[in-house]
Amino acid sequence: MVGGRIVVRVAKTRNSRRSAERTASSPAPLELPADRAFVLHLDAHARPSERLVGRIEHVTSGKVAHVTSLRELVAFLAEVLGDEATGD
Image (tube, rainbow, N blue to C red):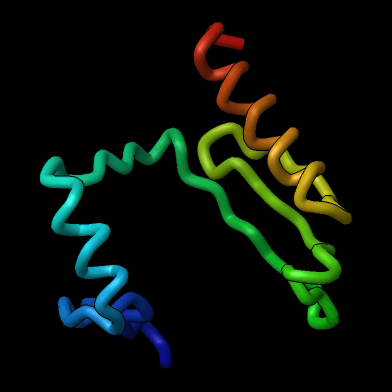
């Protein structure tokens, strides 16, 4: 696909009653600033409920961490977002 668009519009239909309830209970729209964007790339053998293995990257700073647990993933998010708050 040369020069084609790789991002497509997502359908606005709800897949479950639970997601509809969650949306109904939060009237404010989400604020998703680009400086809080991350890319999580999971290993082919990762099973998030049992074994989390992968790489996470903060899009705007380029900071990267290789993670092997949910704890490490959350620690990286906290570190980067904490740095963002202090201006580091």
